[in-house]
Amino acid sequence: METSIVGVGVGITDRFRSVVEDKATRIEHLAQRAQRVDVKVTHRAYHNGRVEDDTVELTLTGKGPIVRAEATDGDKFAALDLAVDKLCEQLRRAKDKRVDARNHPRGAHFEKGSGAIQGIDVQPASLDVLRAVATGEIPVVTGPEAEEDYTPVVIRTKEFEPEWMSVEEAVDRMELVGHDFFLFVDVRTDHPSVVYRRKGWDYGVISLTTQTAPEAVAS
Image 1: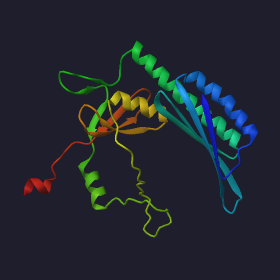
Image 2: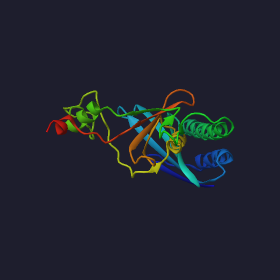
Image 3: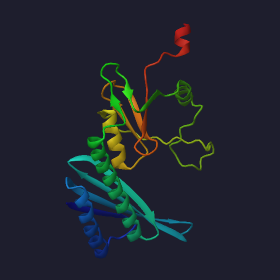
Image 4: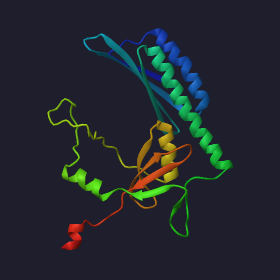
């Protein structure tokens, strides 16, 4: 498996490269289809340099979904250990989930007859929330938090290319990137949807459906 290491604000020593190569062997043992791991080390200093830390980001690519993990510590070697532990845990969870699904089918499944999803909560996003965002009642902040209009309610914006997949595939992708939610387009309905983690192997999904605003109905 190939390794690539990039430092932002910090130099990459031969010792650190050697440790990364050793950790890559551990990762490859859990993800045999992986082809490359990218390591990004970012050094930050706060309060005039009195407090410093290093963030290590790992991105695993290969034949399958991308897997990511990151960790921050005052020492880049410790941050690397934490990030590798997180990445390996995500790989183990994904593997255990696949084995569990084969041996004990449960969780979300699509009922062909009724067209409903069983074993997972499905509910449309609140129209009031969507309207509040559209009208600016909930501010969308894309700049520094030090702006005069800053409020505790902040929505940070990111844009991604849409990906069509099933709910089950979205849950697997969420597990691999280590997030508590994952945005996708449901391949069955063409509706933008979000799967989210609940407890254990329980997940939920929120889907946007086409709705007619009350004003349009009144007119």
